[in-house]
Amino acid sequence: MSNFWNARKVLPFLWMATGVVAFTVVWQLMSNSYGPLLVATPSETMVAVTRLLTSPATLAAFARTLGRVLLALGLQIVSGVASGVLAGLYPWVEDLLRPVIDALVAVPPVALTLLVILMFGSGDYQVAATALALGFPLLYTGTVRAVRSVDRSMLEMFRAFRLPRTTQLLVGYLPATLYALIPSILLATGLTLRLVVMAEVMVGGGSGIGQSLSEARVHMATAEIFAWLLVMAATVLMIEGTLLYLVKSHLLKWQARR
Image (cartoon, rainbow, N blue to C red; front, side, top):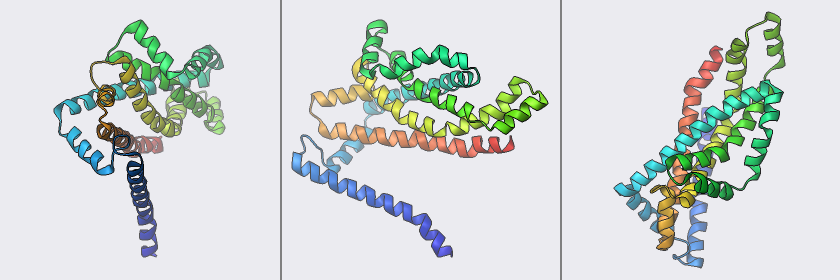
């Protein structure tokens, strides 16, 4: 029985390793077919990754982009959860915000980024504001659904005991909402990084991964472009892993105590 459970634990890692090997083989075949000028080889990319991680300039660019991502993601969570809870509790708030949400969803990211450039120029806050505006609807709509899916029997108990609205929010709505929002927050992490890098490419902002990608494109440094893509993927995994650790070690325990 113990061997069976050990096999169940090891098997997912074996499948992941197989997927990595298969992806690397396909990557190498594409490089052989199209040439290293268009598709860098895995070995060239890993050399470029090592070069990036040992360069103070690229580490500074990475740190600046990471700061913008964390700022935008934090603002998305705070504003999305706050407004989503209000919209879930009061339908008139949802009707009030509906035109704004529909506009943010409908407007192409490139168009909104250009609008930010024309109105406010370039810089850290402009890049973060662009990512905030584009990622906000995801967490807002997720929060509205989570609030309206709270256990009805618990809400009836709240009304029977005439608990204050603040107590209902802290004991009932907030724990259930945060738990239901975990997938949306993880999805918003990758989305925010992509939006920030896109805004850096268009807005500028002096430095960052987007600026480095633009310079690599101009110089046809294909290996460096692929290296930055790997770095961005690793960054998303790192942020998601940190969030999952915080959820498991704090939020779920707090919800259980509630």
